[in-house]
Length: 141
Image (cartoon, rainbow, N blue to C red; front, side):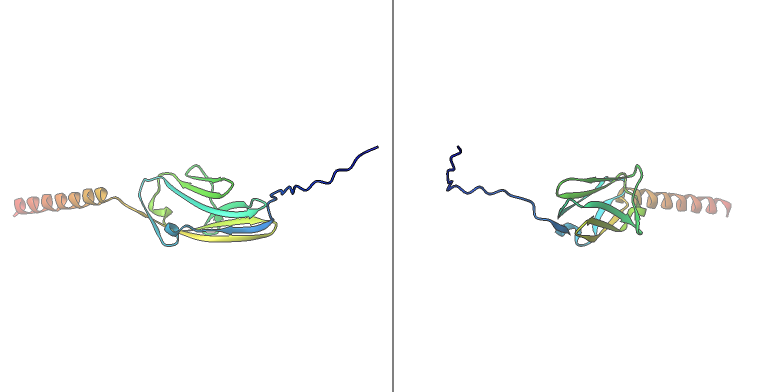
């Protein structure tokens, strides 16, 4: 025969609540974020969603792939790494999250700037070429 004991303790189990994806864009990515040419750009955006959403980074409505771009997903963050950023990487990037309960997306704008050093080199080269031109022109006269 079994004896039944009444228990007065309550056990609570934390069960994740199903939820559609939700992107939480950090303040630094709400406006245009600037980076230097050649720099490794890492864009890290937090999100929620259960089940864990699939993550896509898109450029001109095309999912990014290739050795220059690396997409990583943790439990709470979507990351895009752009290796050796170039001017053509400037512009809007779309982060898109999907699960069976919904979709969310956000636009992240980045600007890749050339370095002042390279601008100075170009300027110095132009001045030097112009001075050489004047010297040659004066010799011909």
